[in-house]
Image (cartoon, rainbow, N blue to C red):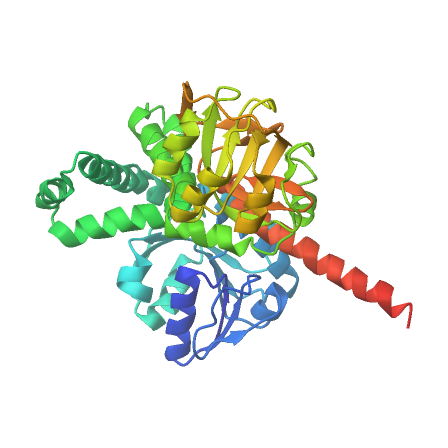
Length: 450
């Protein structure tokens, strides 16, 4: 028996490893070079190569690529193959996958209920569609708690979205309670209060708190789908809307997860990012590197300040975390410098990677000697005022481009690009494809000279 696993992320890798351990011929495909290949799993170079002659196909590409994966798989699927879409997606997406595949395979809607990290391939999976019984039988080969629920493709995902109203809302509430306790200096007490209210106590608290923060972006999209479903059912959803917003906030301000994503942009030219985003979103070319050869990637921490005043910038330095890039909206005023050598020294002490300033700076030679990357609209020897007002963390406009705290900042000799955090994964993939295509074309051009 052969199984093809499309997407070797967290869940995909677990399922692929489980089927390989069960003795199945297991082939995985993931376009990301960072995705690991579990032991015993063959890595395919394309979707088509992976699904060719497969008895079972598991699609775990994320909802954004579910339909594309089905389109790529359709030409080579066996008509009797069972194609289970396990992506957390709206019922409409599942029915679109079914429409794309038509009679090319037996399509089943799969909805994972619970934590794959906690339960592995044995996690509960709801299945719907005419072939859900066959899918359950195949998934049970790895101990899956597979549960056919009847109905058409989309019915299983509909149940998952209903469950998310409670589970994702609970996760959002727990993260907010923990953050409130931390801010008040009462985190340990708050954690005890929450744990005492949960059936599994501290373990449930830790699982929900960490899981919500780690997967905030994906769960925000899922909860938005839940809100849409509630609207179709005529149910008002102010709490779910608030929970979705909480997830988006966590996604934008995520810690190590967001930092790792920012690091993945290192070495990707801003020009390639722009090409991957239809050449839209560049910071104006009047915001230039203060010294040649500077480059930086990192999470944005935004600062809005009155022109010529840097009081808010000092406050931002106190809040900055390692890996941040300060993005300063100084109104484009170049009459007074908002920062110089001393602020750069303090920024380095805080682990700040660089700054993008829609305003002036000074001490250009010293900034170069420090190796501290700064992009600015101008240079001025005049010092700043320190009276305010100003704000930290608000959405700002710098050089005609919008930036929110938690967005990804990429800057090099060509300019500056702000990548919206909620689109960072897709943008990185598109930019890498641009780089690969340019390398191919460059090689062909150089070959003509030989």
